Length: 454
Image (cartoon, rainbow, N blue to C red; front, side, top):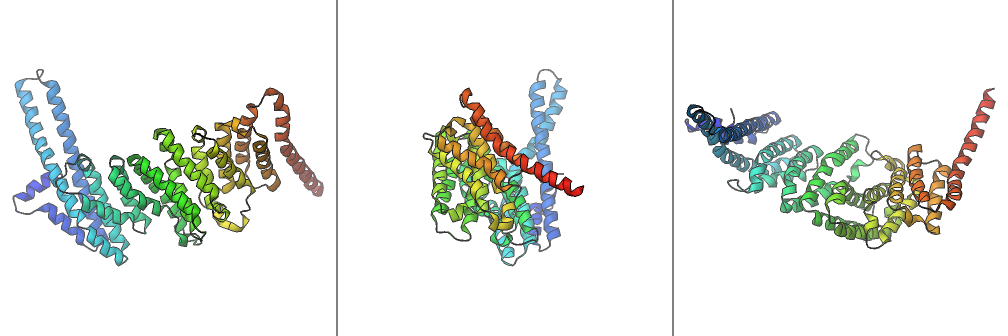
């Protein structure tokens, strides 16, 4: 039985079973609060099933009217009335749960102060369950009472330092954010703050950094996409302002992580942004961001995390940049990608391998996308010289994997094809020289090894 039927059963005994269930949330036992959360979820799921049956009976009655006998229609109408009563009671039941769980926000703060992560996680889970079931009523503004207490609890959970507590709340709010500009606008600053890699995790080998990166790439990225769907103009302006602020600030040890986080937020919504946003507004904000990056002190932008994210940012928005009113943004983005090949990153050690990529790999990806999106913009002598240097760099230093060299080569080929046919031979010759030189070196080394073996 669901919450509606359970409430009816206990009404005859003058016991408000919903209040009794909610009171159990005041337990300090993780097992008890988890059990209560599971019970609430199960009861509300059963009510949703009843609601689906009621809707099906209503449809069946309208379709069968005039086809079935009066007896059959009366039976169908009786069944619909019984389940329809549950539809009337369900919003009231949900409203009571929203109110009761919302009161737990004070206890959440108390338990967080005492370092009780387990109880905080359980309370966040319970709030997430109730929000998931009540979200339609909240969106339609048909909830009896205010959801503010429940939402406040979830926002407290989003701000919690544990990624497990925070993740539960972010996932729940992500489902509601796209339909509410107010909620999205409020949630975005929380998620932007969470996107900054915690400084204390960088040098630790306890697995905390890996857990955080996993949380950021999955849960947080989805949350940012939900916020973007709810307030895309504010999202772009907020990220532009953040990037400009960090690029103009005096260099500190924390600044690269803040700038990297702002770029991460833009990367997380790139797929939606290039498809749904008004291109003029998007280009305006991209120009602001890229111009700020160009003016930022090299001590900040040369940090490997910033280099990686800036190149990925360029990669994701490469096909939009040629649509901007001027070529300035495209040219600056190209310089950012090309300059990455000339950076000395050896002093940063393990920072180069955070995540699943590397600075030079991201630079190769970004440059390929730029070359393919608008090859004609690279036809000037200065641009060709820069590309030639970028192409030679891997063969001089051997710092880029074969896959990245292939990507870079495909981008360069897109540029060569845009040239007049009479220039193809010389261009291909320039492209092939470092490859042939590398093969000669490898062949000599192989001959030496074989000679020693004999």
